[in-house]
Length: 228
Image (cartoon, rainbow, N blue to C red; front, side, top):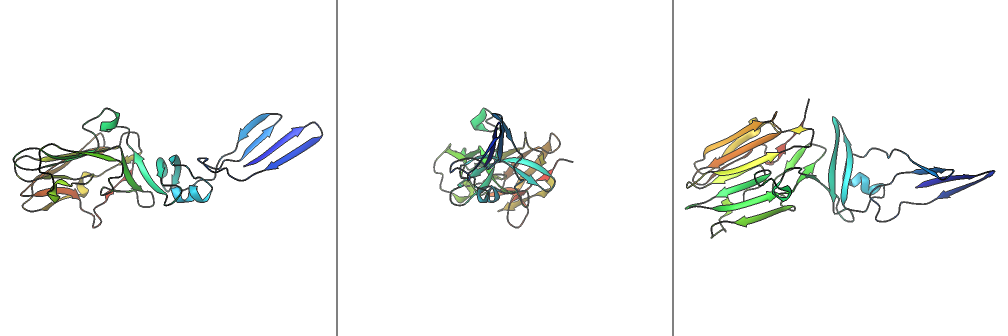
């Protein structure tokens, strides 16, 4: 942080580094007691913010090829990682937004609700296997079957009922193409991905014996695209 103060003929210049715990490093100039915040240099990752002196977990603006996005930077003192914080999720009063439900016979199953999802800004991908900011509940024990552990952007079922899921990108400048999904598992059927609201919302169903639907990319990640 650079601070310049003018007191009549006396000019005092105070130079200091970024204070630990601050969320970013923004130069400040104070003229006659009036502070002016200068624009921070653009950063494309939480690691870049960290290298600029940011040490606090929180919301940061990333400037990427194609646009800007606010992400939640997590673990800033050790291994900075980006997460998208969903506007609509069970934690914000939308129980059918940004969740996955893996059904199992005879009824019930395992439900995961996501308030944030792991995001890779360089590729615009979401890693659905990261459940750091999720909560889960088992509606009908036993819940140890691996097919119950459906990730974000998946829906799984084992015959008695369809698994379901939802992706809701409200508040972001991203879409998710439903065509990127494919069925998988044992005897999959009723596997669908249906987009709405210009593909900012995708609803999923999946079933089989046991089968599921998920992004077809080799790494299983959900590919996002900028809204044109």
